[in-house]
Image (cartoon, rainbow, N blue to C red; front, side, top):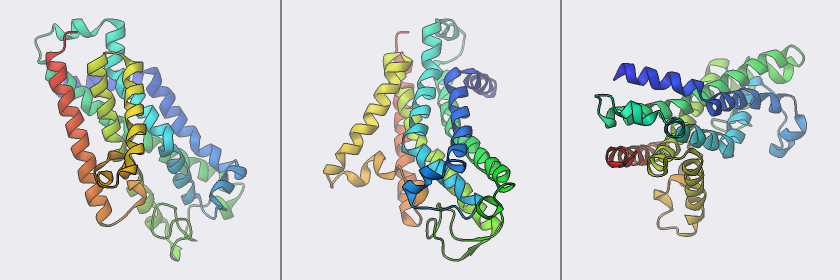
Length: 265
C-alpha cells in the first residue's frame, strides 16, 4: 500500500494543475504585501508580517483554494482516464479499492501542500518586505492580532512571535481540513463521470448550490458550507465543524470506493 501511495503522490506533483496551484498559493501573499490598495478592502494597515498569512489565507479560501483542490482531485483520476493508462493499471493483480484509496489519501494531502506553500510564501515575503519596511512586516512581537485568532487583526494586546505562529499554524491546518470534503467530492464525481472537467465543475457547483440552502434554517447546521470559515472560529464550533467535515469526507470517499469497484472503465 505504501508503494502505491508514494507512486500516486509522485504522479500528483507532476500534474500541471497541481504545479500551477502551488505556484498561485506561493505568489498570492505577494499581492497582499505589495498592493496596499487591496488592503483597504479590509480597512487594515499592516503592523506585522504575521498578518500577511491571514490575508492570503482568507482570500485564497474564498474561492481559489477550493477551486484548485477540486481541479487537482478530479485530475488525479481523470488524467489517467484521458491518457488511457487506467485500464492497464487495473489489469494488475491488485484490488481496485487499494488504488482508489491511495488516490483518496493523495487528494487529501494536496490541501495540506496548498496551505503550507501559502504559509511559507507569506512568511518569506514578510521577511523580504521587512528589509524595506520593518515596522509593517517584521516577525517580532507586536500590538495587534494575526487576523486568525482572538480579536482578529485588532488583537487583545501584545502578541509574541511564538503565539502568533501558533495562531497562524492552527488556522492553516484547519483550512486544509475544510478542503478535505471538496477533494473527496471531486474524486467521487470523477468516478462517476470519468472526466476531469465534468467532475471539477460538478464539485464546485454542488458547493455553490449548498450555499444557497442557507435559506432553510433547519438544515443549515448540517451543511458542509456552514463550516467553510472554520479556520476563523474557536471553541465548540471547531469540534462540531470538524466532526461534520470528517463525516462528509469519509462519506464521499466511501461512495467513491463503492462506485469505482463496480465501474466499467
